[in-house]
Image (cartoon, rainbow, N blue to C red; front, side, top):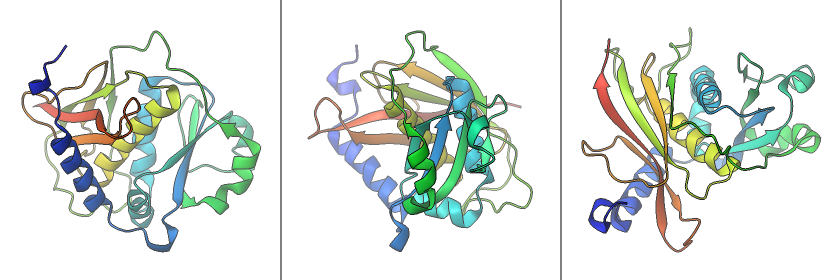
Length: 237
């Protein structure tokens, strides 16, 4: 257990939340736009990889729209193989367990939302301590995120998710937000390696962090809570 001095303060969490709002900018008239993920089954490594692939293939304008909507995503339960002909997705995981639909105003996906139900369920009891994913290579013809740095050696990251009290949909929300926003803003780059760790307490890493996912505390709605923390571990070749 961490002492109070080792935990994130409310002031620090508020600052991280304000920084995220500034990065998102304004989505204008399409502020209620969202992406959609349809899941047949859940595997943490496979889902994380699919989220990164989805963010990587989005055109620049769609990336900006998704970021401006705080990477809002609807998670639906269904079999991608049964709906992909009628509703072609933007990307589908290699094993067919999840597919993604690009960010658009909600009425655009009315038929899909009527066809499928919202995803529900608990996190698996055997959730692994750590899984590893790699940021996909740059997509040919896709514009790099605005302000993204030039090519460099791949970086190894540690993404720690506080799973305490989270149901499966909540976990997916926090993981998707962190990966999507970090990739869109250029923090994550092609071939970077990410160790996704699951914990039941979250404290500031000794070397500082690059991104902090902050939202209202499920146990104390008047307070903020850090749900995910992305920090650089070391460079690797």
